Length: 439
Ligand code: UDX
Image 1 (tube, rainbow, N blue to C red):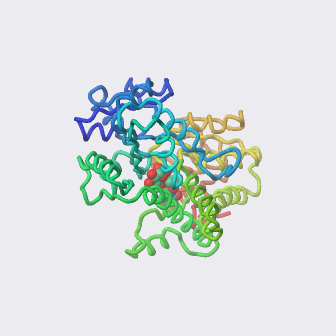
Image 2: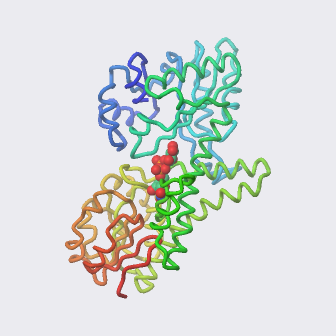
Image 3: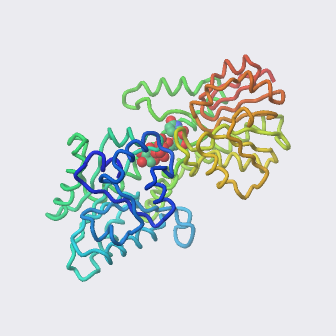
């Protein structure tokens, strides 16, 4: 919304949320999330044509177009628990829009929703007295965290789904006009509502599948003498495959991939497509296995026990340049290490607060330490969980001197200079690589 405000100065954008504290932070210009470049955009537009408020009813009443970006977590109860999307916030919002509208509205789905939810939305909105007309569009967001501003500024495509009626076409055109302020027309795709909804799930499933595919190969590389980086390079140079999203890792995380794939699996099952469901489920299962394998390898290399040993996790965010830890592989790894009775020390430049909340129940079995040098002091091992640039630039001689020997580095992102670490004296294990170790 901040980007729309910046690019469309004649449009008044009001962002509303029921969370008073969060709205106050946005208003004060001290943002509640870390996203490079976002503050500059907000600062430019704040109180010019970008406003933040907790008065949801009033903002609904005044708007011509409403973007709904409420959370759609995975259901934790009842039918489809653990897989289907929990749409209660979405439905509440639909009813609130209906209750507060006295003029026609275009309602834009921004939340990722399982296909055919817009129909439910339309039915709720049409259940009123009929004096106000609602047109529901699907406009899924493809930005990635950490690169959100660049992704919004220069998107590969903008996708807008609408109904093939006259009113539907008018609504689509209105939304296209907004994006056309800065996105070339040929990158603005218009489709039917279902295609737009499904494309978002499908894009995330394809992306996650690439990571699971390269991770599946990483295990084979470790068992043989192949190097997963070399394999990724060789296959990525095939122009049909392309070089991006082929970094083997301890696993993918983030708020979207797992949730969206499980949604897709549930959808396939609902339509009786057991094979399609099993196919996509395997992308998630492979990701769980990769994380488990990482810990198994750590324990195995460290003489089959980490009990009582200090282990430093470098990074806790699910990727660099964000403080977000949702579904971060570091959570599972930290928990398993604690189960093995290790003393876990977590460090991260932006995600320590979230990490502490994720691992709250583990009490003093986990220590949170902002300084990576202090985190590694006295440790038997370092595990790189997030590819933050700052971790590649540390003085590893100094770190090595303060660690227990033999000292181990488990590089869950293949981001460190393994040869240099080995020369310092570390035993080094990457993902999909032959370990550098004298043991
Ligand atoms: C993703 C989609 O990219 C975005 O289009 C969608 O809107 C939301 O979900 P995001 O979750 O922010 O974005 O992060 P992304 O960059 O896709 O990375 C997801 C996870 O995969 C991270 O944990 C990342 O570290 C991991 N990953 C990515 C790999 O392990 N290897 C890779 O080669 C790429």
